[in-house]
Image 1 (tube, rainbow, N blue to C red):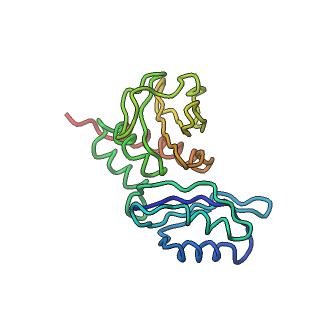
Image 2: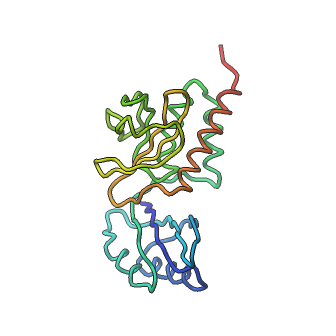
Amino acid sequence: MLLRIRVRLPDRPGSLASVARTLGAAGADVVQMAVLERDAGRALDDFTVAWPAGAATAGLRDGLTAVPGVMVIGIWPTVEPQGAHPDASLLGQLAADPVRGAMTLADAVPALLSAEWAGLADGPSLIYGSFGAPEAAPDGGRLGPSRARAFDGDDGVHYAACPVSDGLDLVVARGGEAPPFHRTEVFRLDQLVAAARAVLAAAPVRK
């Protein structure tokens, strides 16, 4: 299985290597790493690691927090798509079947953003949901104004939302030990939706 691990660490030589060594010693195989931000001598990094299915992560968390200056922000399961350019691959799928474009987008986004589910919301109504989506959208009032944003629900679930068209929002959710959506993730969602709109608008209508 794959895990996403978000850590805050000192932005200085050797810190990243210490985290990588700790992950390896715990039995985690690093698949990829992304820097989310650097500020005031600290960095926020995401690691995707291969981890034995069913194995507890408490020891992994303890090992990381034992590294000087490292804070674990979240450890949660992820299902990330294969390939070097998953966003581009998704846009190709949208162009191939524009009729299902918005639904294909909702089905694909959870894997891209290490989320649990996504859906298309028209106010309080969830008119389409990926696997695992509930029957209702989060509080409709929190879906406005019409811009890409992240927010937390009263149920403790973290959400990111982005307008797809007038009155229609793409909502992405994750809970458990996962952290809130970072601004870079919200930006990626916004850019992906904008690209999807352009692709779908340019796609020829098949008769």
